[in-house]
Length: 614
Image 1 (cartoon, rainbow, N blue to C red):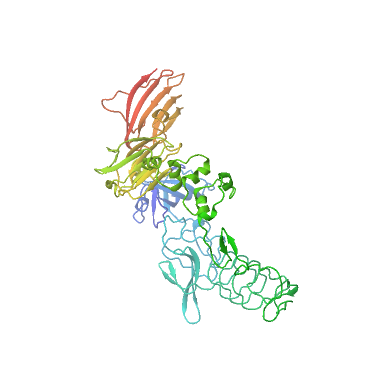
Image 2: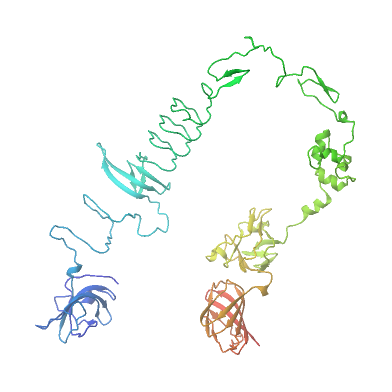
C-alpha cells in the first residue's frame, strides 16, 4: 500500500452519489488505474461530469481497490460542493489521476521553494550546495532515526573539508566509537565512517576533570587536584597542597602561600635555642659551647651510647652497649598466681603470654594457673594445636545434604537416578558434588525455564555458589534457596541440551498452590506460579494457560461458589487422553472438581479428570 502518481491514467464511470466510484475502463490513449496501482494504494484523483453545462467536479485523495476496480474518495481536497463530497448525477464521468495545485512543489517568483510538512529524503547521498544552512531544531540527530540495536563500530560526528594553504584536508570532530571518547582530528582519514589520525588542539575554557598532558598557558582558576609536572608560570591563587619541586619565584602578600615547604631560607616564626633566637637565616652561638663543640654544661642527655655506671638485671651486668641474655632460672623467687599474671595486660593469660614470660613452651602446671583446675589432655590439645579426637570427627564430617552428580547417556544422574525430579527445602544447604570424572564439560546450572538457556531461559543464581571444575576433585555447587525462591526450578547442563529435569521447591506439595477466582471472561493460569491451583467459580469463564513449559505438572481444583451454575472452557492447548475419564463439569453449589495436568510442550497440555467431590 503506497502513494503513487502516474501520467495518462483516466477511466470513465457512470457511478452516481457521494460513494466510491466503479471504474468503467479507459480509452485507447489512456491507461487504467489497475495497470499502475495495487490493491490499497492511494493517489490524487479528479472526477468531472462529462455532460455539457453540468457543474459537477471533485479533486481529492483516493484509495484504489483491485477487487471490483473501485476508487474510494478518501479525502476531498476541493469540489463543486464547497469542498465536500459532490453528489454526482447520472451520466458519464471522467475519473483520472491528477496533481492538485495545493500539493505541488514549485518555485515562486524569486526562485524560492517552500515545503510545508515533513520531508523524507531516501538515497545514498544528499548534497546541499548552499552558502548558509539554518536549522531551527536545537538538537541535530545523526546516526539514524532510531537507536541502533547493536554496535556498528562506526564513529559519529562532523566531517569537514578545508585547505591549510598547502594541501586539501579532511577533519573530524565527534565521538570515537573505539575509545568511547570525543575527539578532534584536524588531518583525518575516513575508512567506512571510522576516522583515524593524530588528535588536534582544542582552544576552549575547560570545566571538569582533565586527564592527559596540557601544553601551553592556563589562564583562569584551577579548582581540583593536579597530579604531574607543571612547567611554566602560574599566575593566580593556589589553594591546596603542592607535592613536588617548585623551581622559580613565589610572590604574593604575606599569607598567600599556606602549607609546609620541604626547604626554606628562613623560618616563618623564630625559635629560641638555649635562650638564643634562631630563624635559620644565620648561624648562632650558644653560651657555654666553644668552637670545638664541647659543651660546658651539666645535666642528663636524652640518649647515650652507654651508661656511665653499669647496672645488674637479674644478676647480669648491663651498661647498654650490647644485649644480654637472662635464663629462666634468673626469674626465680616468687610463684605467680593467675590474678597476678593477668594484671600484666588486663586480660586472661594465654599460652603465648606464658611463653613470653619464661621463653619456653607452656606446661600443664602453667596452664593450671589459668583456670585454677588441673589441665586435661583436651585443654592441652586446644592450646598446642595437636589434633584432638573431637576435631578429627569434625574434619571427617561430610557437608550437609550432599547429592552425588554423575553423567551417563547424555543425562544427569542424581544419586544414581537418571534425570531424577527432586524436592528442595528453602534455607537448607544442598551440595551437588560434581567431582566424578563423568561431569567433565557438564557444569550443572539452574533456571526457572525447562532446559534453561537452551530453551530461551536464563540461569537462576540466587543462593547458588559453584567451586572448582566439574569432573575434577573438589568440584561442587552449593544451593541454599531463600523462602521466596520460585516454587519450580529446573536443573540443566550449561553446555548441552536435554540433560536435566524438574526441582520442586517448598516444605511440602500441599503448600505449593495458588488461589484464583474465575469471575467471567478469561482467567489466565500462570503455570510458572505454582504446581497446583484452586479456582473458585463465580461466573462462566474461559481458561487460558501461560508459561507452558515442558515438564510442568500438577492439579487444578475447581470449586463452585454458594450459588453454583458456573461453567468453564479449557484452552486449545488442553488435550484429554483417549482412555481417560470424560471431563464432567459439576456446577452445583459448592461442588468441587479436580483436574490433573502435565505439559508435553507449548502446544499440548495433557488434562485428566480425576473426579468430583461434594
